[in-house]
Length: 256
Length: 303
Ligand SMILES: Nc1ncnc2c1ncn2[C@@H]1O[C@H](COP(=O)(O)OP(=O)(O)O)[C@@H](O)[C@H]1O
Ligand SMILES: [Mg+2]
Image (tube, rainbow over the protein chains, first blue to last red):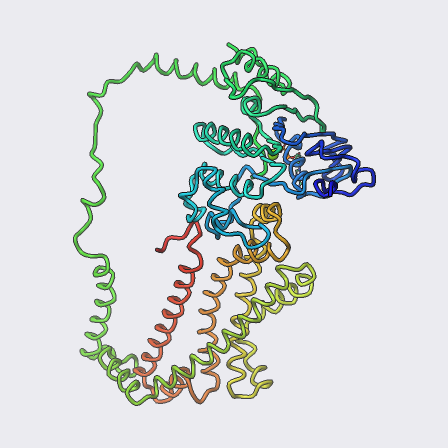
């Protein structure tokens, strides 16, 4: 069934079947208000299958709200939202259930009775198989975040939603985690929507960088640099500077 | 956390101000040389520890107290009708065990506590689940329970005697009542206190409503439930003492009432010691449960 791939968060008559699998995410006329204030206001967004999209924007502009809507966690919305049936989320905090060993966390919510080997394989992929039997409280920040990533990947998502997953990590761990996400994406080929406040991270990983402002996607920047990307590349710096300017950060001082 | 922290606005003025202060400071004072610093050694903790083992030190206090008590008794300062001597108490305790009256009384009392605890747990946890998991349950259950909770349960003893007579029923009922409220309150608070972010994570993993309850809500409420159990056990003993002293023809409380009538302070103290030991035992049971069930907690310190 072609329509099975896309499940509307809110059913709308013209949506069903109208969009084929040419898109991994299709959002149109999306509005979400809190107490009468529209945080997302008539937003439009398309993500191709296998595309890596980064979403930038100042704090409080509604990035997490959009991500939660795409994840199906917030349904007080108006407009059309089409997302793949198989999607997974990793949040800024790892949100592992502290009362379950790491491998049980990875398997949580999977249909049927999956074997532990399934979890171990996913943990292997993020380099954490040796911590499979540990309590979450004994993991370091980076390890917990990788466990959370394994929990998302084991669902074999067509769309991976990441909400500032590296935000709480120290600089070195963050670089490693970014590299890991890049590798996993290339191996899995799923569409990724990465919310971040780190412009460098966005340019490093994404095919396309979106800037959100005033409840809509206000700016879009395609990144056509070869991978693996080199942050010392002048074109990289140029893209980065352009995006920073878009975000209202004065780049003159930084360039010096 | 889902709240994001984008970089704040330009920081330039702040930083330059700090660095200016720094240079001023430096130019006034000049770099200090290490030679005139007064160094004191930080001794490792282990080298200062005394050689006496901790367990020995901890038992010294009670033993001294016991010795003082015995001394006061043998010198006649403390007469037997005020408080019997430790030696006498040990003797009486042994006699009571030997003639079977103490084990019999403990058995009767334990049965009452167990019955009340079981009933109270079923009712308290049942009500807490109803009001913690369902909006309707909360509306129906929480307000009446919060109101009833303010009634001191021992005050209900006369009413219970009228309702249930003077057999086992009123005693078990009073323990049940005492146990129900702390369990209800703690389990309910535990359920409502489960991290909303974890529930959201569970939802995003595709857990059904029952799956959320089973894998997220109930385990999250477990620490609260065990706290409630600990309180409940404490109150169960208290309720037992009240219930058995008001009217009883068996049990530890009955032994005490009898002893009071014959001014037998030795028997009373033996019964108090039994109460204390039963309390310790209950505490041990809860601790063991916590050790088994709460290993995952970041604050878990046992091993
Ligand atoms: N549950 C809520 N109730 C009221 N306001 C909310 C709620 N969630 C988010 N908001 C508001 O929506 C705006 C966007 O929030 P969010 O999506 O978290 O921003 P960010 O882009 O930093 O992720 C903020 O102004 C926030 O105060
Ligand atoms: Mg956010």
